[in-house]
Structure formats: C-alpha cells, structure tokens
Image (cartoon, rainbow, N blue to C red; front, side, top):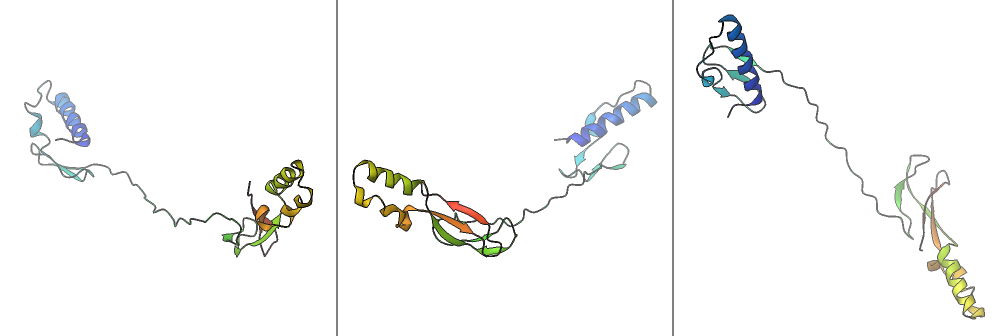
Length: 147
C-alpha cells in the first residue's frame, strides 16, 4: 500500500517526466515508488532513478497534561483547599449559618401549631448551612447548603 506522500511524489515525477520527455509516460507506477519507509514518512526510495526523497515532517509538540487535583466537596467539616482570594493552601474554618432548611422547619412547625418547638431548628447545627472561610484572608470560600 502506497502512502499519500508517496502518491504526491509519484504524481510530481509523472508530470515532470511528461514535460521533459513529451508524452512518454512510465509504463508501470510501481517502478517509481516501491516502498514507504514508515507511516511517519521518513525516507522514500525510488527504484527507477535510485534517488532518495525526504518528505517534510511537521513538528508536533506534545505536552503531557499536568497533575489533576480532585477536590472533595466541602460539606459540614473543614476541608483542605486552595483559597481563590489569597492563593494559599488552607484548611477552611467552618461556621453554621441559618439557611433555607432552618427557616423551612421553623415554618412547618409554626404552621402545624407546634408553637413551643418552632425555635428548635435555630439551635440545631444539622439544620443550618455551613460557611467555609479562609483562615488567612477571612473571605468566604464556599457555603454548603443543606437544602
């Protein structure tokens, strides 16, 4: 099987011989290009004129991908992460804040006339959202919402 570069060289030789030797074309194409050295197009040999052609090779730079850091999702415990503000590797500080779940449980208890218990969600940490902050710059990195 003849490669694309070999076909291009072969057609160039056919047209070149056709111009110099009037209309006398070679009888067999296999006499022009006999072997393809590799799929990388190294040296191609030619049996008719015993000349060698070096096809131009495109220079391709392959860069290996860098390390991929898979970060676990931030939940209710402090997490090791990189702060987007100060660019430091930190372990976040967590703080519970009142979120939608806290207010939804309060509203449900309030609507069902369980008056004495409707304030309990404001004192239960598992009903609150968790705010992750950077210990260096004190900016909020992430808020884990329970609902």
